[in-house]
Length: 223
Figure 1 (tube, rainbow, N blue to C red):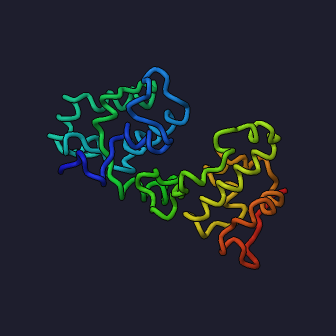
Figure 2 (cartoon, rainbow, N blue to C red):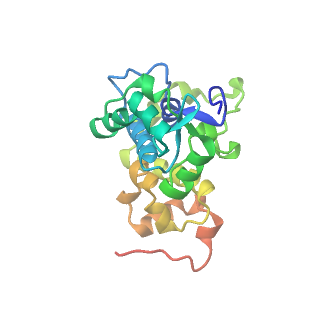
Figure 3 (cartoon, rainbow, N blue to C red):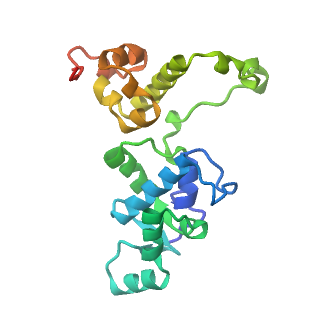
């Protein structure tokens, strides 16, 4: 199967960078950011657990139990490199940039298994941040971040929480308030755990999905 230059396939190295909005050609392998490290490990762990398939030189690897596939994995040291990546976090750029994953498998894995945002290169166009503002209409503040420095830390957290909830509800429309508050992405990046269930609901209700706003949608709380 032809995978190079095919929009339905990306290497682990390419996709992980796209996921965290980083340049795959600029990364220093010895100075990988925490966000990129997590993205790489998530993809490689999914391959190891056979949640998504991997291809190398057009052939499936690591999940095929046939004799020839196992022999090929042995000769290419795929199993050893996978173990080194997951257990020792030794990232071999050449190796990671030779392992391809398939679009529909990654999208389904993000939605159904991990409940994570889809990498931007494969996300539906309507969910991507719109950036078609004419150059002449750019806000002068975009070149001066002093407003951000003046903002109290708690207010920054509120802004991040609201915006992240807004984007996630576009993807997961059938989540209630407490389900959104406990979503892994909200917990990791949106500071949602710092708000009580009631405070979280009040904070994000203006961006909530229609489902979450339905009368009778439970606000689950143990407090």
